[in-house]
Amino acid sequence: MSKINILSSKIYNRISAGEVVERPSSVVKELVENSIDSGANSIIIDIVDGGITSIKVVDNGSGIEKSQIKNVILPHATSKIATIDDLYNIKSLGFRGEALASIVSVSKFTIVSRTEDCEYGVKLYSEGGEDVSIVEIGADKGTEVVVDNLFFNTPAREKFLKSNRSEEADITSLILRLILSNPNIAFKYIADGEIVYQSFGDGLESAFVAVYGLGVLRECIPIDAEKNGIRISGFIGKHHYVKSNRSHQSIFLNGRYIINQTIASAIGNAYASYLMKRQYPFYVLNIEVPTETVDVNVHPNKLDVRFLNNQIIYSAVYGVVSKVLDGSSEVVDIVSEATIEKNQLKPSEISEEYVTHNQQKSLRNEEYGFDKLNFCDSKGAKSLDYDQPKTKEDKVVDIFAENKAYIEKLEREKNLAKESIGQEEIKIDKPLNYVGQALNTFLIFDDGESLIIIDQHAAHERIMFDRLKKSFTSKEMVVQPLIIPFILDVDSVEFEFMHSKLDFFKDLGFDIEEFGINTLKISSVPLLLENLNIDRFFSLVFSDLNLLKSLDITDILFDKIAQKACKSAVKAGDKLTEEETKAILSEIKNNFGLKCPHGRPIAVKVSRLEIDKWFKRIV
Image (cartoon, rainbow, N blue to C red; front, top):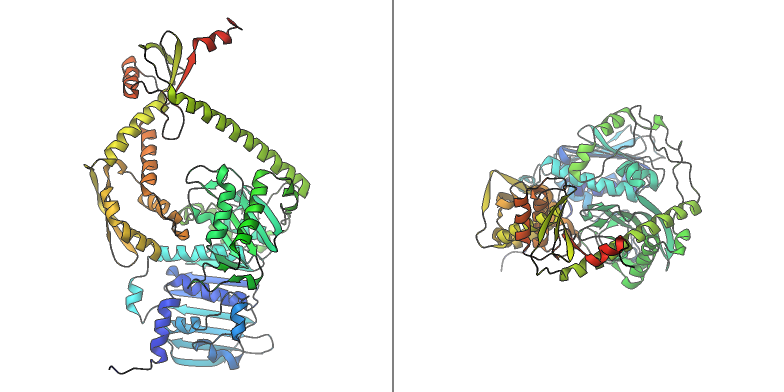
């Protein structure tokens, strides 16, 4: 039998680091959550090179006493739980005692802290958990933590970090949600010397504007309601304000960002009748429940939770959201008051570099997948130029009017859909006489009894789509090699998904191979999709993975083919020759009940009887 060794702290802290400190964003999460739990109302996050070179978090919280500072880097040391009962009534964001010890073990770590009743602060420094030094130092109240050269002593882990920009994007996404979930804390987030986000701790609307901009706020409905002992507040996007993936959906449970199937399904089902395929609603919702009714320890990173009663949660969330969307009379008690006044944020509160940065930020946000942040003018003043604040009743009237117009629009579309279904039976057995082209858009034929009006773009689009789809699904797939292979960085869940689907993508014409941990190399794409934006395409493929749902990738590919068909087809306004017209008619093969890939009818049949009625030839 092999000897059983008792591991030293140097070894088991590094093992813990592999679980707790997965990447720079994990470090930022632990440090910022500690700052929040310390009672801070102002937190600064400053990173360099995606957090790989340096991470600094400064807060004005309660601080750490000199006698306690040495315990910070010990494993299983925490100020947030004391007894086993505390595990079942967790109100803090973090309590894993190994977190800081793990961070210290894989970095050059400095912490400076001072409590309010101490004249001097205390500084602790360590490299890789060794050579710990503690000295008194002048310091402001609160705590400053600096993590330099992350993974400097674990080169295997450092090697497989993503690019600086990708790591920064993960941190940016994290900070976005920390700002939204803690609207009463002022955050300042700096990356490589540039301010990315700055919030002011004056409420959710202000935090929302700091992240998404005033334009997005105007596309949302603020809500605040309580049902079944559950409080639901935040913002839900109006019916027409939709996104192509789920990255603009944020759920916070008791202040903690979570990904939860029960809540997401409730919101998704409330929106279901208003959304088309692969359209996703925008929302930022805070859910508050009694701590004893939820278990936050079911996920290693605490991203998911388990409720004592899923049905109650589902019913509460679905009920509130659906009532707002459907224009129920109860909306009066759900829609919340505006909280930002015109003069609430003064120009003096906004740093000059933040203004400069926001003037150049739209491109950066598009890269992160966030909406443009445009709420600072050239002089640094917050352009929160709301109309005069409306009463709740006025706001509800606006929502009712909008919902009524939207529902009427849906009814019209449903009626059109019913009419188009009837067109599926359109069959013309008689020879058609070409009358001509009207408005350079519609091709008109008659069979002696009726007029057949064809939308030239919709018809040609359907023809092109059928051709491309047939080619795409054939066994003789033509592949287009890329001059320079595309390197795709993914997270661990996405990587595992792609690993299981490599053969499937190969059958579709993609040459994809693993290229290290959480990295893929794409060397070719189907020729039909040679101009495909690979990054956006896979973002769409991965859009549902956070909820661990399976995807019908073929449908996504056919959407891309439909887009190509749309671009390739003749357009409304194109003048067609008689030969081109006859070619379209021949391809349709007398099936006038077809629809374009977007669901629009390609033809309408108007009988002689209907035309006679138009001109009052018959009554």
